[in-house]
Image 1 (cartoon, rainbow, N blue to C red):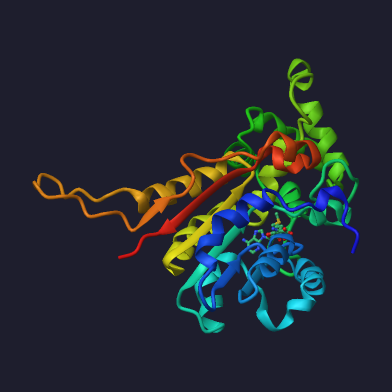
Image 2 (image 1 turned 90 degrees about the horizontal axis):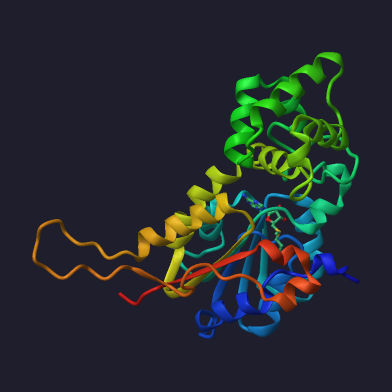
Length: 314
Ligand SMILES: C[S@@+](CC[C@H](N)C(=O)[O-])C[C@H]1O[C@@H](n2cnc3c(N)ncnc32)[C@H](O)[C@@H]1O
């Protein structure tokens, strides 16, 4: 399969290097909680020849593509259609109560953005959908055509950090009185018209924040992540490692907070005793970014924040 530059996995070598010390033993197991097109998974399976990999994705078409890509490792790979907050159950069903490595490469895949009919991209005209799992849940179409001004404003403000949330919501409500909002480009145009002309001239496409907000809402991304990260930390074996790649501040904040909680020593209030050592320690001091060289060949790497953590020996 010839992959375009847009399909290059982000921070590939750094991710593998961060996970590597945990995967060197006998019979290691790694969970790729966001399998996507299987780019990171493929490299892990190539490099660690005894590695077993459990790959999770909520998008059936991603799983199909990854299955084809990873077919030569068939006997070391289990692929599961699930939402990643089911990580404990998925591991248990494959016979694992602890694993050596876990990877989250968050957000949408380049394939999902490229499949214009999925409605993720404001640059391609398509029906509004944005569900990663198209077999369930409300679509972006339902949200923009039926939600109240108050609900729309909240979604755009909270998940898109959109300053003009209320104006955009009002414009959506006005427009849909005339005809349902069916397409990505119609919505993108509407957002552009809602914001002051001076703001339109700075920054990127003004629809970016609205599309991010709808996608996060439709897929319940932040709540799922809030449950998934602690569950994944629980699953890590002693000396096990986890790497998370996030692409926007809302998800990075959740990861940072969950990592801080398990890496802070507990100091019993008012007692003159040594604090118990924290069960995990950070492998990345704050978050890391991709290198300029990587960003030059893979623009998706521009916004990545890399965080990694290891479970200490008891
Ligand atoms: C950025 S892509 C992963 C790309 C992959 N690392 C690669 O190299 O090909 C993210 C994938 O995670 C999936 N995903 C996002 N949120 C998910 C969730 N809550 N549960 C399961 N899969 C999820 C998406 O469907 C998408 O295929």
